[in-house]
Figure 1 (cartoon, rainbow, N blue to C red):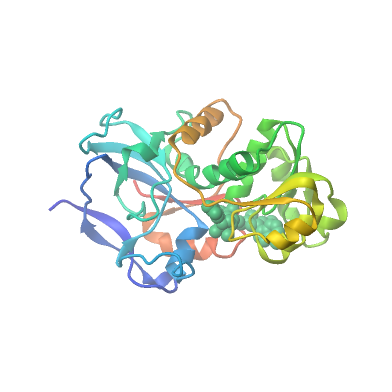
Figure 2: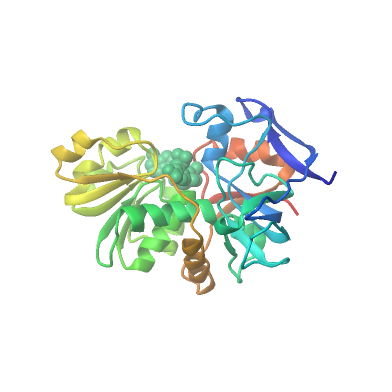
Length: 312
Ligand SMILES: NC(=O)c1ccc[n+]([C@@H]2O[C@H](COP(=O)([O-])OP(=O)(O)OC[C@H]3O[C@@H](n4cnc5c(N)ncnc54)[C@H](OP(=O)(O)O)[C@@H]3O)[C@@H](O)[C@H]2O)c1
């Protein structure tokens, strides 16, 4: 049996439940491709699942391979995986219900992958799919952000936020972000027009008449966000559910987004990267064997951009 290295989660708990080991290489089913993973992105959902925070929504069959971002090379085609050939360099945010990308190989639906940006290597490409698709689906699909509108992006310096800032700017919006002051200069370079240090300033004291709020923090931050929207504006949350009651009280709308795989959007993102409009921000690149350390770093809630695991 062909084997591969993978990091598997053996139970719900701290980073110590992750184990690097030799496991059977997956077989591509009909409609799948088998990808040799070169790099895997790390996202908060990885350590939230590991810690058991999402058990109310989904149980994972243990041992389980986490990781829902990758960039790599197609090594085998399952039946009916049309349009792809061996050696194609691809990236994706695959289905959450299947074993993930903290591994040397992943079997993934051909309908979920896309050619990675030509101008980036695999490590850089692996930082894109989940966070950039989330930003896209939140601000464009749910928020319908248009040129000339004003958007407030919470956690602008994070994985999702750094893409949201660039995508909103590319669209022609006026971009306001919340972040600690150490991130302000870098966020201005990415395209933010205005930045608010949440440690010293309450954003609701200085922001008003916003068309779209991207909420990546929930809690008190979300509660204080309804009032900065103009009437008819929309609060899009990527964390749980917004309050319909509060929305009604402020005459605003709400939407919730849980990111979905999307081949067409990955293609648009690759084009934006290759034409210099968008780039991934990567704080750290660690070897696959250090997945537990990557989780601990990401769980500080202060990652700038993304953390990526190098597999090859
Ligand atoms: N619904 C979905 O499909 C979906 C998809 C992706 C992510 N998410 C969720 O969305 C959240 C954000 O994801 P992410 O990948 O962007 O996380 P992340 O990269 O871990 O976010 C870290 C960033 O948050 C900022 N931050 C922390 N506290 C803040 C505050 N009070 N105000 C403003 N910024 C603050 C930090 O900036 P400073 O260092 O400057 O404080 C840091 O740059 C996570 O909870 C994640 O689980 C949901």
